[in-house]
Length: 354
Image 1 (tube, rainbow, N blue to C red):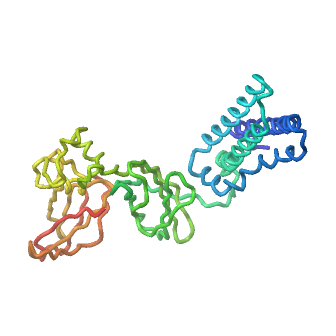
Image 2 (tube, rainbow, N blue to C red):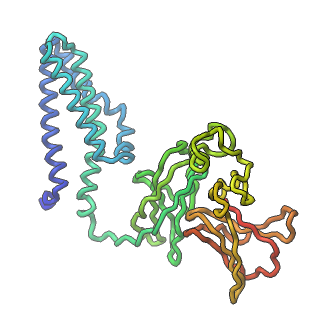
């Protein structure tokens, strides 16, 4: 009985017990009401049929609702709908009993069963959230430290780049990415993923954990949150909300994608791709070289969470650019790479690939 020492558990147990008692009494009263209205045992039996009709219809979705939405909110909304249904039926009876028809009662019973079917998974998982983990196996291994930060950057109307610092020095088997509070993750080998199929202009949240080859796992990271870009209603190649942020609300005054609004040598379309401010000439992708004892350090200003690829060529204008190393994930507002054999390379460029 030590579980009753938890105040939250006592509250949900008490509310659930009282609510279930009230629901049973209401079902009894509605059954009696149907018998009074129809004097039919067949229709009396239909009360239970309508009460359970919704379960096979929506059972495949109720678990998703419990995972996708805050469970306390689901329970509150369900109870509110039950109260509203009961009060409405009671008001009609009090006003004029003759107005009540059998289908009114069947509708009320159906709604009662519907809310019960939706509530049940949320109520059961809420109990586990409150006390389940405390009474789990004592043999469960301690969780490893969480990933420090998850970066989420908008790529398009329907895509987000989700990235995080790689876990080095450990035998990482896979990363688990949790989307918008869902409890079932998607698994990835690398430390970034493009999440597709999203709604334009909508906000999404992600968490990440990692699993080692020996089965040990980490705590969940904090949430990384951002919105996808909104739609390009004026079809000029740039999201309208990005243009509104930088150029004001008057769409007729927005410059074209090919213009260089701040005179820094990069078009508005290139500024959008680079994640820089098209109205600020000082905010531009700039590269700095620093000589080291071994090789050369090449650094550039960056957007945290973005992926950059360093490329080189021996002759400008040839179009023959080759990648140098792997893509670099920016963890701060500057990123870089050390070149140990830079002597033979004459020209470099940085491409923001995600």
